[in-house]
Length: 194
Image 1 (tube, helix red, strand yellow):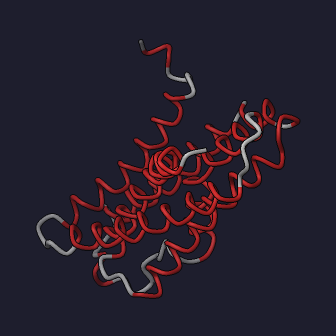
Image 2 (cartoon, rainbow, N blue to C red):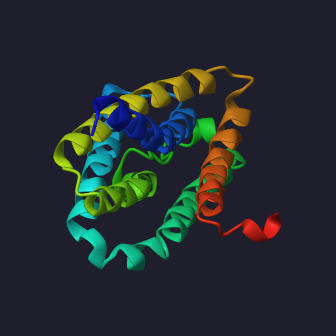
């Protein structure tokens, strides 16, 4: 597979990670090096591992995973986005010392899985086409990590504009919901709306 093709796939897969990173940056407002590293490392790692997992699973589980992968991604993004919206409308967020950090714990794992589930399907596809997966997986992981860094710091800049901060946080949660709905749309679940 040509490098430009792999890069195109990697950029397309990184869009969800980028959007979630922007929303996370908005939610955090102050982003440390450690938070940047954790989020970009996990998003990049999961984006690299999912195609490997998909490739190794091959055709034996393709139909099984394909039947509900979009629902898993939708539910995970919907829950995290709902939590962000709840926090956006909560009391005096500035004064809450225990503000949830999406770059830690279960939330980090949930976001990592939700943003990389499409990469599993890419791995399955490459398996069917008998394309070697290691090199594409590395490129996909690196691109996802870089897009995550950019998105996180873009979100931080948007959140630090005081007047836009509450609006940006609401938009961040809404973006996660829209990504989830778009995943359902891409899988034909919302065809009844047409």
